[in-house]
Length: 63
Figure 1 (cartoon, helix red, strand yellow):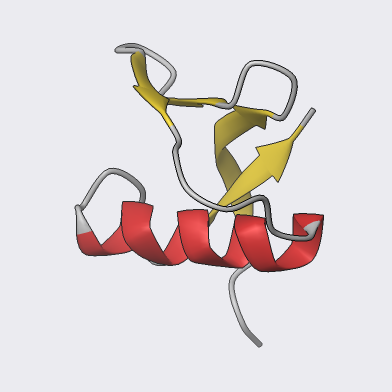
Figure 2 (cartoon, rainbow, N blue to C red):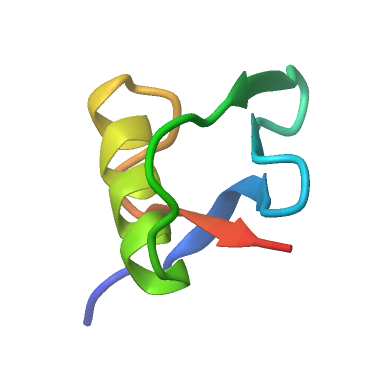
């Protein structure tokens, strides 16, 4: 059985700011072309995992 995904980051689509963490907050201004929500979240999640900002089961959610 696979481990459940845990939300470890929030992307605010209005301000285009990605906030990651529960005890330490890091905000990033996301630039570039506007993508559909699913593709944007997939790219942000992949990037955050590669930067070791979230764990392998972590995901980014959008508000």
